[in-house]
Image (tube, rainbow, N blue to C red; front, side):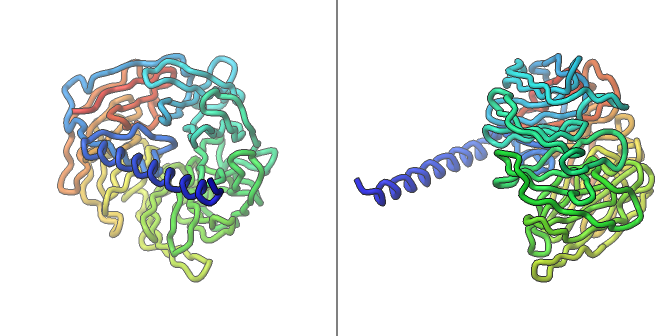
Length: 434
């Protein structure tokens, strides 16, 4: 058999296999069965939108049924990633900051120490592991980015943000980023003077490029913040969008600084991951000195400029640290510093469509969307199901996480019909299917 024929048959086989996989995914979607993949922070598209269907549209008084509970995960605020039939998270155990893999019933498969426990306020890691096939990536609170084998937890490579890139945080609660895998590289935010954002070879950790971030304004401070990178094609240029100490920035996928927007920054902690849609970026920060803004990315050749469409003052709109979700023309989130007031905002106009003065739980709320509803997780451990519709605010049920030790901050994850709630040493798995 000729080499050309062998190559042709190989291509045909790959195409047929891809078709069968896509067809199976479509049949599953048609039946309301969700793919159990949530491989990184805020899900496959980093937007905290679950594609699950056929979920409960309201909850009984005691909440959805608890399927299982896993313990001994250590302290911290990492949420979970779900990929390849495994669950991944991080926690500070007695002597080390640790990456942990569980099976789909909560049984520990492996645990790998990656750094020292975080000694500062609010102990434990904040990063959610990023899974890319047989490799996964984490950032510990001291700023080491570590690549591990997802099947065994064996360390493959590591780099240090402070030592290798002179990296730093703009305030003092430890590195918190969840790294982004894009094609052959890992994109991350050391926050160094000439290495604000860097690209590393995902298999070896070798540096591909580094990008210096100029001072884009006087608000905030130099260095990395508590957000994670998202991908945009705004202005016709493929780029990485990140919220840093001085505000939101855009860096091209070949490492060129494109634009920065300083008006959104605050001096304490810039946290929520930006939302991207077409040529637009919606962003918000809290601490009474942030606000919310929409910028439009306008391209000219390889260059991009960010034009402010509107800015909302903190009393009008500010997301503390629970994140935001964009569904169609609307953003759903908690508003207010340590408040989490349920809010629906038309992101194109900046108009508040509806808002409750206070939420059903206390303090800030971390949010996730699935099947027409928002899952609000409040800092006091109360979980609320709130309709994601612009016509009215509708509360559809609440329950409390057992053994809550506030602040209860990790973001909820809804995937494969299950609701995962990390609560310090424990992980609770609830069945939210109809």
